[in-house]
Length: 313
Image (cartoon, rainbow, N blue to C red):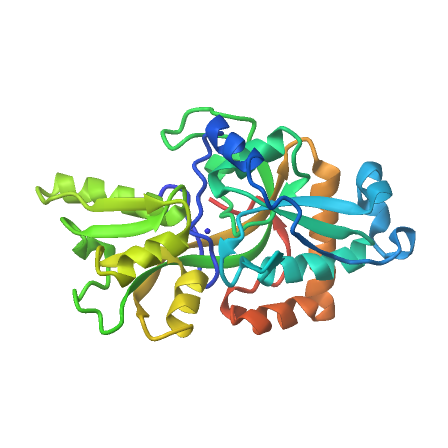
């Protein structure tokens, strides 16, 4: 979920969310109609759960952790009817049982999630977000300070992949071949950054720049690919692999690029919640429910052996 900020090997959201805290993104998010349409998490009795005492009292008393996500990233998080499902909600459910709370997912626009969390709309973000130094430090894509930054609890690893039409009619299997071509991606993601960096390389080499078409969701990017309007869609490996596996329209080509960790994001001030999430993740890794969830969604290759804080680069 990076060229500028990097990503990972098997499940990473090409989502690099430009760390610039776009107020417009927050307004978009605030306007989303399906606010709490995915409530997952442990229904356990708070005080009886083994890790309940690690949570901030406010969250422990409420029995709910409010989570911001962009539910358009199958198999990580997506909507089935009114419910948000996928690997992230399943992991949150397992962690909730350890913490004695439920995780309530709210759907919004990816590049507005950090801003919305900073303003108090969510307690945390779980949305296949790549852990990068820029996001940790609150820097924009030019390296300038744009916000407070966030802390990450890393839970998976993934890289960006190239999705093409079945049979790869344009014979494109690496970004270095995309100079002068139209390519789709999701706006504000790591994959978007990879394409922007490659465009600069194309120009410096005296070639035509890549005509990058960024969209709000990867679903929109794949529609463009299906119609033949672009030669490829660059997105996180799990998403690209799922799209290829789910039908006969697409295939994944080339190697994964810039593998990096996905992280659950919290504000810098919310260290108690951060540490509670780390403890809960380590607990589900230890009891096997973590591995079971990854196997269910076919992303075992992105698994980690332990939770880490801010391990992205």
